Amino acid sequence: MRKPVFFLLLSFFAASAYGQLVFEQPEQSFKAKPVEGSIVAKYRFTNTGTVSVKIENVQTSCGCTTASLKKTEYAPGESGEIEARFTIGGRIGKQEKAILVTTSDAREKPIQLKLLVDIEDQIRIQPELVLWRVGEQADPKKIEVTVADDAPVKIVSVLSDNPSIKAELSELKPGKKYEIQITPTDLSRQGGATILIHTDYPPQNPQTRYAYARIK
Amino acid sequence: MMSLRQAVLILLAALVPAGISALVNPRRPPWSGDALLPGEEKLKTVLAWGPKVLWVDARSQNEYEAERVPGAVLLNLEDWDRLFPRFLDRWSPDQKIVVYCSASSCQLSHEVAKRLEQSGVSPVYILKGGWEEWKAAR
Image 1 (cartoon, rainbow over the protein chains, first blue to last red):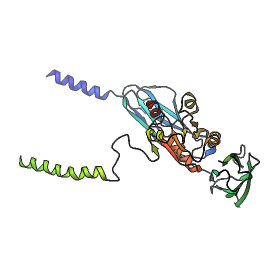
Image 2 (tube, helix red, strand yellow; image 1 turned 90 degrees about the vertical axis):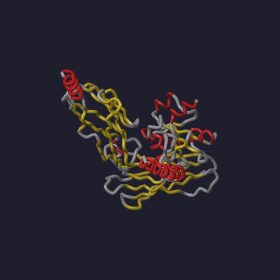
Image 3 (cartoon, each protein chain N blue to C red; image 1 turned 30 degrees about the vertical axis):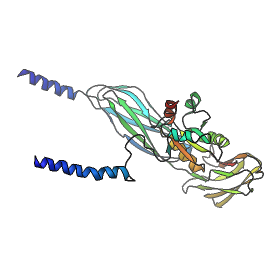
Image 4 (cartoon, each protein chain N blue to C red; image 1 turned 90 degrees about the horizontal axis):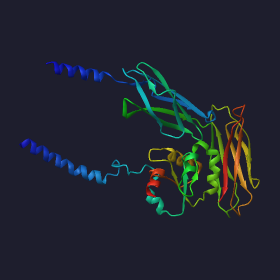
């Protein structure tokens, strides 16, 4: 009679002795601009279990995201946070990155955190590349630069880094739409230029964007 | 006993059209990890294209410097403005561009391929299995 009661109690305590990290916001969304450089998300959590939990691994789905935490072991009731830093780089549009957290209480089933970043391209350059084939006629090609409606950005000048490929800026709609005319002077051989598009934003360190011309 | 036999017969009758659908339905789901995502190509296919391929390594500079596909050019979104002109200097419009990152699970090759296409460079393909696949085949 005693044995079943013992096993019942043992199984009850075994089931109730657990560690569990509960995250306040496992999915976080941000809006960002390319000039911001990076986004930092903080995932706060609490060990709501009855035993300590060790964070054994934090893995991100992309080299563009790094994750760090101050310590790895958390006592029952203790809170902490994982800091994820997402580098914007040349990314534009909607980005979805995952952070997998492996803990000692559930090694086979990592906790998945999500980082959603919507990067608004304030300056749209279309096309980014203009191409001529060697020997073709040296007709000028156009690059359109569009500034987002709510963006406090102006294009102030353009410059080609190759004197034999000329770049000329004209404003189609004040402060919002521009056209860059690219004219090569010599299409008899391969060559190229980087077109520097100078803006006035942010005022303390104005951003330069780029377009490219190639003769192939 | 009779009802069991009838149940088996119904099951068998259902299996025939299900099997046909699994074989010929154009929207059938992929059954294995060998299925290609849009834009992906298998290593075997890419190797068959011969020398008209420009390999693009979408991993970090450190990974690229440690080991890479011979002749591959480094291009990632972390340093796009510096690397893209170097890529353009190596690229010829007659080449097929094949982007790879570490493994099937990484997304960097898909991101770089998308950005290349937005920039007006084509055709762009993604190596299924990435660098791991390349290494395994060597």
